[in-house]
Length: 186
Image (cartoon, rainbow, N blue to C red; front, top):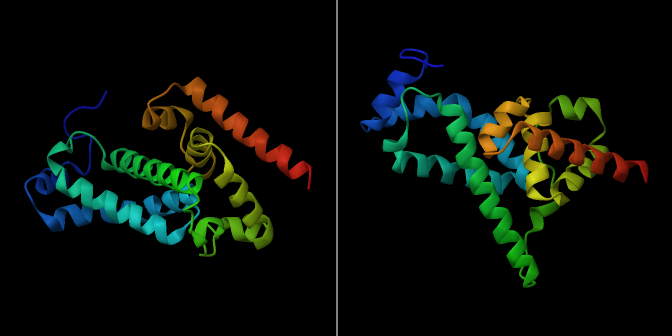
């Protein structure tokens, strides 16, 4: 149970709710990189990820009265970004259905910055894994990204996605199994 004073960002949230742009910037500053990485992994497009994160932060600013000073901002921002990613993926799917998919970045690298992934596997293998993740149904992709890549617990992922821990466990298992099957064929 959280009580008064449990949230270190409580004062910043209150100031942001009152209209302080400086407080809002400080509040989201340490979350932006993580949100950008999440959106990039979900969309497989760095430029679309930037658009989604900017759009999400603008939306949160416009609806800042909904922010709860007693709750940490990170999970709320994650939910907003995931919802925007889902919307973008739905639009992409509809556009593809009608033959309007002109998205050249659909198969681009999810993270051009050097990181643990690039030191662990070759760039070609990383591209194949990212392409396979991008082909997964959104529910499997969300669970896999949140638990395996973001390092969140199944309970946190379940809370963010509005489902049960067992559903997250099943989705992660299915996503990993799908990747394993696909790469055993290669």
